[in-house]
Image 1 (tube, one colour):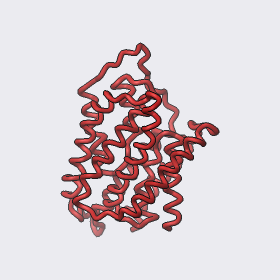
Image 2 (cartoon, rainbow, N blue to C red):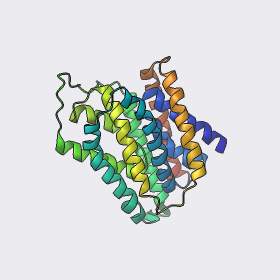
Image 3 (cartoon, helix red, strand yellow):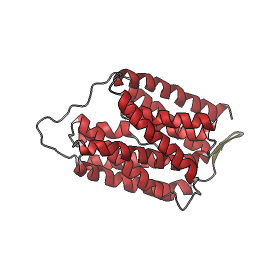
Length: 265
């Protein structure tokens, strides 16, 4: 199973390089089901893996002028604060046994996996459906909807803190609609925001968990290697078709996790 886990780690990076997002949604299931890591600890590991791979992905985007630092700061600040607070205070405060339904006990681990699976379903729908792209700003003037940006940043940060996913499928449309960024710049800026909030959020876990740094660094290294493979492959295959196919895979995985955690325990 560990060998499958290492292979899946590369696939996570490849998917990020190929379709520009969505791959991080597989990180927690890979850690839980292939490496046998506790779901709560897996969300912490996921923050480090997702944050590191996103940072590597953001560097070439920045060199090509596709990262808007002002937007990253305005959107990222509330997201970083929310994710750090969630990992440092909210997650440790959740009891091991959350509630009971008849003979079925909903533990902290089960709750985390169900939340994650629901996020997977929403992310998959976002990838599958043929939706119109958000209208981009073409007049060169950037306008900020500050109240909505702050609110969206807090929501994304809270979600990232709870389930350990990057949330790019939420961030990119928000940057286009609320910050009036062109799509390519929104993708690059999103990577920097994900990197910052994930890695800073991860520091909130350091005092609560004992980390297996060897495993964490190996999986992260494989995912980063996968990004370069994915970037190379992206020039040879259609990203849109891959995104839809990957979306169906994520949908099936999300439904499987819900069924497994609720009915096959």
